[in-house]
Image (cartoon, rainbow, N blue to C red; front, side, top):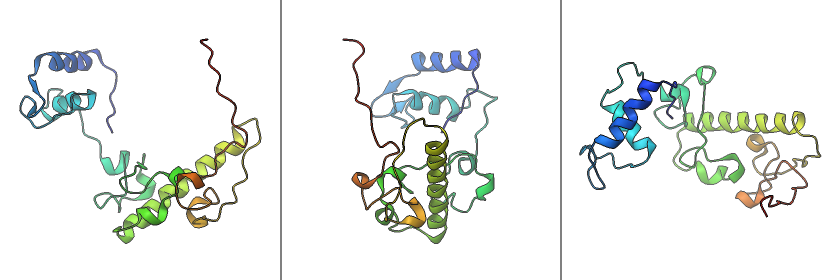
Length: 174
């Protein structure tokens, strides 16, 4: 995760480096093996080469914790952001808890359980307090201790969506 404070000088530095640093699809930006041609690649190049002296690196375990072996023991109450990617914990709407746990340490299991439960609580709060239409009853029986009724079984087809009636998409252009 990259967090930038808007600053014209920073922006100008990144743009200048993008246009002036040699890039090769095989060797990357200035032969650094960073072959990402997108914004992430040039930003990594700029920050890795300390071209912005005021930049500070945030602790990934606090700001983008994914419960991997590096971050799975971070104190939960200090974590500002967590990352529910397919890599570790899985995405809650995919209902893949059994599949995801293979090879996990006890610490990763505990951290992912906490992240998933927190996400489910946020989704439930949103459904109950922010919508002006009927929401789906969450009575699924797949890992109720984690998904709290949001999944009927394994796999994304078993995820119970928030809304009971999904409005038809309309094309406003035509």
